Length: 74
Length: 458
Image (cartoon, rainbow over all chains, first blue to last red; front, side, top):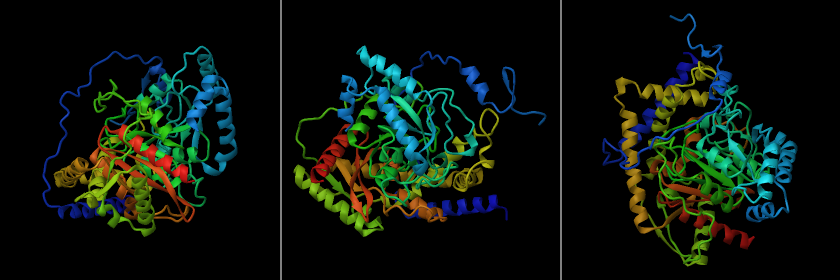
């Protein structure tokens, strides 16, 4: 078994154990959510000077103004 | 003391340049042994000079001249934001996180980016790609994590205040182990814009300092709404640093459930003793609170964290920036990605995640009921003392257990802080205090009152 598979199985085992423990809790309701009525993001104008240059500086592969995402992969 | 230093900077008794130079010197002398910093801001002295000009003109902000260390998962424009991982070891931030923007607007000076557990996955400060951080307050012991570098930088006197992040205890755990103060705000109190997420429904940016006043000051600055973040509350930000002159007594809750989970009885004895002393000194009443489902916190927390972490790391594909995460990360990060991927597959129909969310709901209700009868809950920060550096803990469940007392606050979305409560075998022990959501004022006041009693005794 590869290391990757070992780690995946270990992770799944931990998750199954944890969820089995949750089975012990009575009253588990299937749905839970948060009421955030009234908490709505209001759009605002933003300015990011030099953003393009900074993005291109981080890109592993680029061609002038373009970030190269997939080269010859299709 | 920070309050006195700020007054001194305002009056010109110490300049911003002197303050920053002092810390840069301390970093040069001490950090080779502590390893709290991954990178230093080369412009910090230049920024200090600008701050000094503003101070002279009487136009400086609330943080003018102060050195602030920032955890390496927060975007600071132009700085290396590596999350302590080879995945991002060549990623330089293209913008400021909302919290950073607010700090800079108040003329705070970012002195450097601190070490941490890789991608905020851990509890010890040992899993960074840049090496483990030492604990300046307990030599030979782990500093805790994941905000290991921020806590260690404070403890070693390498900055005034520090920013950390807390998903399951990552500010409070290292604050306790390093003997400093730390606060995890309520979910939504501080904008997460610019924080590289660990689990988006738990993460909060918070403060660490030598004393509660430093945490309160930073909280005043970074709290509040953000147009970049729909989950940040548009709620007024109180003056957390203001000393409130009113009745000092509060209703303190203690939980048998947490006591039963404490593996080291000495921790229970120390914390119980301190709670009793505090209650007696302030005329406060203590009572037991029933937190019926809090012993399931770890089991509820980790499935949610795994799935949200898997989702949040899909952007690290090495195409726009950095490198492909699965090929450049440590084992614990990989475990959480693969585990999150596994349990979010269609064949499980969300069984793990949905059940964990339902359990989270029960824990929220536990705390809502508890806070109807008490103002704050006091408890230890971790169930055990920090282990020795180099004592390899290979079993993930053992590491996860460190979060048993801290992750409930993240699950419930409430605020929680830590102040130093003494030592056991020379190792600092933090008292954790929990307060209801958006009651950082009550939390910080209680932390400050507790601290005042401790310093009076010492």
